[in-house]
Length: 127
Image (cartoon, rainbow, N blue to C red; front, side):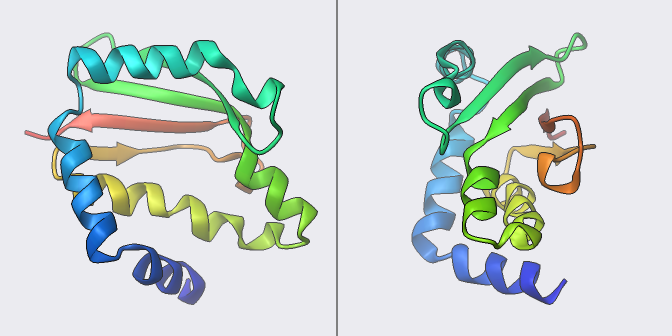
C-alpha cells in the first residue's frame, strides 16, 4: 500500500495531470475509439516484448469501453529486473490517471500482474 501511494505521488506531476485532463477531453470521441481499435489491431507485443497486445470492446449499453490486455510489456520488464512483486503498484496508476482525466470511472476486475487471465481496463462514462 505504501509503495502504491508513493508511486502515485511520484508520477502525478503537474505535467502528467495536464496530460490526463487533455486526454480526458477526447475520451469516447470517434478519434479515440479509432485509435483504440488501431492499437488493438497492431498487436505490438508480438514484435516487441516491452509493448502490449490488447483487444477492444465497446460496452453494449454505450456506457464506455474496455481495453483487454493479454500481453504487458511492464510485466515482462519487471520480471526481467526481478521486481515483479512491485508491478501491482504500477497497475494502480490506471485508476489515478482516469480520475485525473475527469470524464471516466476506471473499472477493472483482473490484472496480469496479480495472476489474472488479462488486464481489463474499463472506462465508463461519468454521469
